[in-house]
Amino acid sequence: MQLPAPRGPLTDRLFAELIRPPHAFGPPPADPYGGPCDPPGDPCGDSSGGSSGSEEDAQLALFVCYELHYQGFDGVDDRWEWNPSVLALRERLETWFEGWLARRVSRPPAPQPREVPRALAALVAADDGPSLSAYLRRRGDAAQFREFVVHRSIYQLKEADPHTWGIPRLLGQPKAALVEIQSDEYGGGRPERMHAELFRATMRGLGLDDSYGAYLGSVPGVTLAISNVMSLFGLHRHHRAALLGHLAAFEMTSSLPNRRYSQGLRRLGGDAGARRYYDEHVQADAVHEQIAAHDMCGAFAAQHPAMTGDILYGAACALTLDRLFAEHLLGRWREGCTSLWRADAEVTTR
Image (cartoon, rainbow, N blue to C red; front, side):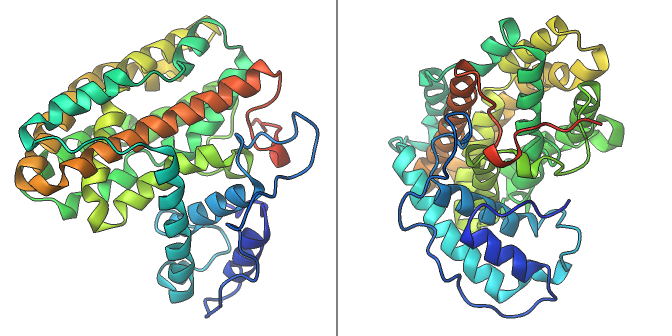
């Protein structure tokens, strides 16, 4: 994956440092959190989802810091992963991002441990955000479906990896339940059945570039935030309960939308290979949601009664970001504009 184009003074400075051999560097001279600085342009020029330019800059910088723990970037030395200057910058960005989440996500009340599965189900049932899957099933055109897949590729091509950080932080039944879910995500040992590989087939079926991170420069901050919250929760032990709640909400809201995505892709002429990713999730996630709610989150709550509120908060973060994502895409499409980042709105195909 290549470093994308910078989106402000923070990413401009960070990327300039990363292309050099690892070294110490100080904080950037400009504070990206000091206030709005929306980029100029026509009404369809800024598809950042209502984010300020500083938020776009910060989300991309945080994503790049996190990506050093995954596949990294071409031309960026792997030793940057644990460089103290990068970690110091990431800590600043995480403090900002946690505040960003707190302003957007209402923290649910902490339930009793035995009530956690029921509380998760109630939280999911109460979500009244717009249905992106219903739109793509019935009305979305081929260009919009491709845009949707471009957005999702940022996470889906490393599907399950952020939640896997939680495995060594668990014991007993919650750990076994998470391993069971993740084993399915990774294809049960068969690489061609890995969900990331199935998604690559979807991308190829739509004529998109299926290489890892190909569209990082094409997506807005709201898309990056979806991945960033998983990495935030996964890379910090004190967020492990939120990580489990996030995964539970992810699984509990998957089966029906994926059925609709498959139906929408069939309507648009997608073949069985392109639809397999969505069809696989209809069945797999119907099982996963029970494992996640009861065997993983319920068992973890019994082990750690004081952390039930964190489980629900992680789930609320997943639901809120999914709502913001859907609002962004549907809002841009209603305006007749691209939902992609303004600086790179054209989707390249293979």
